[in-house]
Image (cartoon, rainbow, N blue to C red; front, top):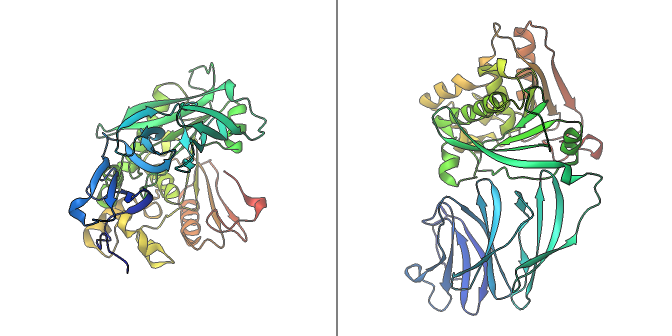
Length: 401
């Protein structure tokens, strides 16, 4: 018969594997940043669970793998990945050396082997598979894609800047080596900030083309994401959602203040919840940006929960059915805060006519209202992809960044 280990469905439990009669489980039970516990299958009651890898500082324990008789744990450390090897009892052995600031695709291996495999990627590093010798702590390239891109010509750096309330927020900045900080560089700033999603480095051939043309790419790891666990996530939800917009605005101000670019050369973009982000900051600080691309965005914050799966988003956004949350939502809703008196940047709204996650009505209403109210010289346009959904579900001919 099945034996219940925990009937409390408020927490996450991910079985990692077992060594003899000890079952290793990754969980956020009593550990918002996650921990690895050991459960003796001969004595599995909750009071007998043991710490194998406890919470560690502000780092999120993202995954764990059993291989070569060891535990390989992957952490999110300041929005980038790091990996460590532990003994089965949780004793730290070594850190896995990585090619740079980037993201790991997770380790895989078998307990009886001394070899594990993982992938690594970064903004200037195409996704590459590595073969890792656990005993010697040595990685070697197992497979690398053929990409016509000189990764050595570019650099990825991470900076920290202060948001409106003083919170330190990390941001990645990618550009050609030797970039002159004269305020003239065309710059793309991206953000998401929601639903506990961590925005870690990754490679994109389309971004590579932007970098080759001399552009700067920046990714702000704003609150609402999961980069620092549930506390970071909650700090950007419901009645604290404005923190997300403040963090993103502060990122733009940092890039301008540090002379990477200027407001005349700065473009911002985001998709879905990130589209909401772009719609909100464009209303609040339109003078900061030269161009904005809100893609498949949630733009009507008073009615989003009335369409398709929108009612599930009230965990992050709140609901207009609640009086206090109604007022808060109204104050930043992109659709309801478009002004006829502000000078907006150039805006390109994009959506798919078959988007069943964020219905295209959001983008239709937002674009129509902005076109109706804005009378300045900058273009305000909408691109509607036909036979296309919420990114996934597009014809191959329509796949873009």
